[in-house]
Image (cartoon, rainbow, N blue to C red):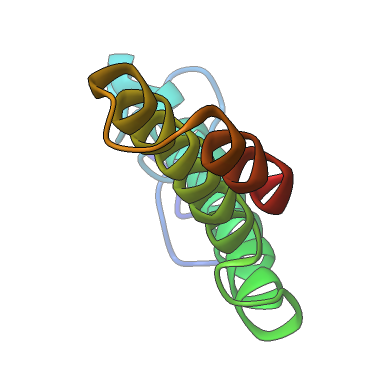
Length: 98
């Protein structure tokens, strides 16, 4: 066999220099890992940008206020149904909660 002219390797019977079949049937793993690396990096960058630019708990506060109003109205309805408050008191509570 002849010596390769660039890296001191040898030519195989197909004229290739070095051991080009090193990865064999798993050649696709390198490409897949490369794609996963870049997708992960993009997701990480987007997450970091959202953490530093977004408002903290912006949607949670609004949802908890709506839930609290619904709960308060439900309690007022329950008290009215039990007869603990009069219709006028219930109407006033309902008006205040809306």
